[in-house]
Length: 405
Image (cartoon, rainbow, N blue to C red):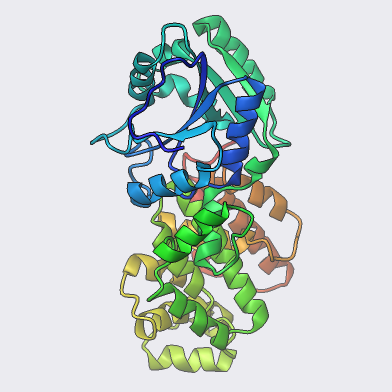
């Protein structure tokens, strides 16, 4: 049910689920219902965020889209309600302020359960008035199956001792679904049926959310004609991973998506054609590129992206240009495209790849560094010459403070 004017009087136990819900999916709904049942709450209040203090650099759909999708997704459950408490507020929304306002609307003694992701538990004390917040309500940390809870449990025990925190854990299988993945699937033309409620799926289609039909769809259609099926499948895989990485590290997802789609546009050109085109468009060929023309596909890809697809953003073009070799002092977008190209799910497994995939979403620089090391080792094993830009990328990252060890 939608509640424009909340009346929380009379409830003894309520649960709160906040989030961007961009879009809301079955993982959110299953988690909410599991918490409601497990902790015997009478209502679960969904609160789509307005402006979050920790996501200001990330692109988020308009708040009314996210609010309406949440209403559509929860409408059939009488124990679910949606609040505009943050949507209608101006400025940045802090959890402590929302919780205080909601508690003031409840009867004295109403027990509040705040649903949050397991990883967020480690950040609570860094939130505004975090020490006060953890005393005001129960926290329910929902986890995916297989999530390593050892560190989380140890942290929770210490938090209980130091701040009298009330922290519970609940494993939710459906949390394997993610909004980031859904947005990536939409952008790359993959189905989202059974990942979101039908009403939300239709709303996304009708509103054209997450896809610039006039541009992105045109690129996809052209790529299908220009690439082999294997290369196209690889490209779509890179695009999906690039979107996930962009979302994780605060990069512009649209730029990551476009760069990923076009990164291999010149890959399948014969080497003789690569050399001829490079000379024709004025790409400076050093002695090494003359000997390794396959490396030209990044440079030529940037040229084709500019002349044939109208991409004039040098930030995007550089990500295409250096996606194979890397270089010293790579931009965030360059690192994302370089890494997405390595970890995309259709790539054949080789020793070291599982570790790079795992590290990709923990430490970007370490993952890129390991990718470059593996690439250099592969070239050496083949008895071929390593391009100097890759060596410079390796040396630069090796001296960066961001690498662990």
